Image (cartoon, rainbow, N blue to C red; front, top):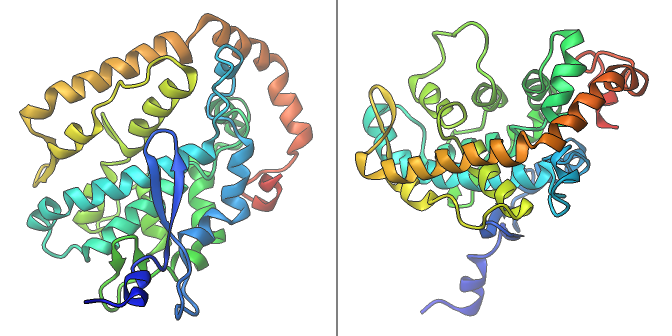
Length: 308
């Protein structure tokens, strides 16, 4: 029988975050004897992630739905959680299609880090900021996200050696460029990118993704629009990889239909609510000039200016 100390070691290196959607989500933290290693906590505590606490998920709709005060930070944590669950579930079919894929713990953590950082490049007012400020520089929040991941968070990412499920295989290390690829594919497809990584990217760009599965549930809950609109467990269970890419078994079609209807209703009743749209139209007149005073530089050239 294990001693109390041996049982206690099972909890070292992990912590819980309370979440209104998933109840609890785990994340990795430094463990005894792990000198030199970095964990998800280091990414979460970085100023690049912490700034997302100041960026609302629903910048205009929160004036219509007073309870919708949730932020990009909360959404990023939720996306990390979903990405890890999908990674663990899909690994078996992914390995059948791509025998050269790294270990399951590596794939789980790669997806979790990409989920955590997928919105790290967002500015105030989210996509509105892209359309009415970043466009002057030919940028999107995804472009800035790639830059932040590679240049500012790369040293942390490369020193992560385990997922919540356990350590990577010997010699494996996360590549910031791989994380950045999952968030935004380069304009030109690189033939050197392994097939397994290309398949994983479909979890971030498609009909249902780790991103929209979180924000549909979170936005619906926080606005009070609906409390139970996505059967994610069923949708995940019937998702798998084939040589053609990500696929859904016919038994999961009802769950997909439920999700798509929920997303459509959110667009009609929350994102495109008449008052929300009126607020956005009013902002257009002053937003670009105001942001030019607040951020008078190209954020891709001086990323530190973006922190404030």
